[in-house]
Length: 429
Image (cartoon, rainbow, N blue to C red; front, side, top):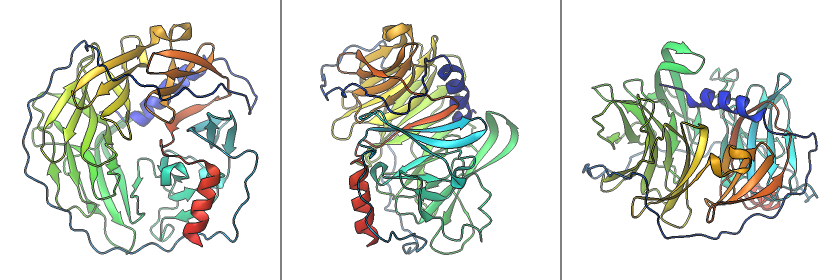
């Protein structure tokens, strides 16, 4: 029952120090690879399917009336564009450098690394993108790409949340609800025996609403893209992790999976952009045999994709327009040691990029860069961009990421910083 934010922290600290680094903040990377794709699936080592389990048709959630929070800082004038505007795709990093925590935004187009250091970022334990990557949710506040707070959780200090780290908290897309985890039982640096979730209605003072019942929410919560549902894991009555969804007010809780074999945890949980399916990783209690599952929300049908020797799944990205997704995992060769592309419609593994194929024989920090066919990753020789359509890697450059704790790809729909300014100005005008 691992808390993977700490697990990834340990992995990144151990791998990033081996990558050649420089102190330069701005470099000239090569151009991003094109969106060249190959739709012909290749045979997976294994791709067994799970028997479809019908579930009752879900009821439309009935939410309590909400209003738009008013705790928004209004800009007084439209900022002008500068030469250091971030074009994207972006990678956001949490970094602890010389005991100072801060966020760094790496623009893969220009090579510019923007470091954001201010009092609002003291011990940031979680990042969440908002508004297509124009904003970041950190410690109860929405920050723009320059680190300015443009919104904060209403009644932040009155609720006693000012000192919270907000680690694992998830804000709804409409900013009306906040899902907060709580930890209990035996705890270590990278695990807790029980994790439960509660939701808070931010539009009116209220008591927390319990969402989980048995302490098995180790993947925390994931909002559907339309903000209507929350997906999370919990133990069933037999102590087996299952996938659930619920409205934020606790209504219409529905069990989506019915595992019978013992597994350690469900992680991660990622919604398809059109809200119709959920992909998640199932981590077994044994040393191998992890698998990716895809659940259809309306029919309850599910299927498994199981590459050979898979031990853990770290990240999942859905294609925005096609029936494909990609996920990173590890096998016997190390952390995040492979990238796997999946044909969702046919429930088949399309192709795999493994560490042995990377320059220097291994890679770290694989993050999708603007689409599921382009990946940014580190190697002993620097950082590269991978064209997933043909598994060819092109040298990107080098950048100083000492003290790296977490890396998060920007949404594929990121419009660029100049468009973000225009959109936020028009919204608040």
